[in-house]
Image (tube, protein in one colour):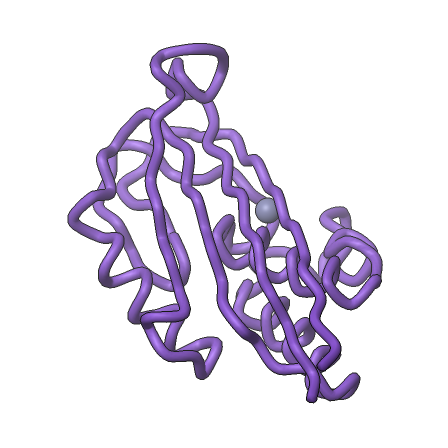
Length: 159
Ligand SMILES: [Zn+2]
């Protein structure tokens, strides 16, 4: 069996707003993600982890953030391309781990919804998906609530 892992990371600034889009789920909030695309940072980090596992380039290579064509881009399209490339190479997902690092709002009550949403988007059982939330203990820009970060890790396999 051929097994690979991939690592993804993303950070976005936060601005005034009324919701966060995390893994396809709208989370009520007094801040929103500042982005050229729709700003779904979970899907960005996850897509990058899949590209990473395949030895491919980062998502900025496929979806430059300075083009009119990627303005307000539906991040599900980024994930679709990553999954397409994974399938083309004959791999399937083993498991997925996502850590959302933000000071506020607390997303504890939304982690389950995000997991279910990712399960649908990835066609992967929920027990192969982990969605964790961390604060930055008030330290740095993320701790001050000016930005949020997401780390993602995937394992892909081919028989
Ligand atoms: Zn992003």
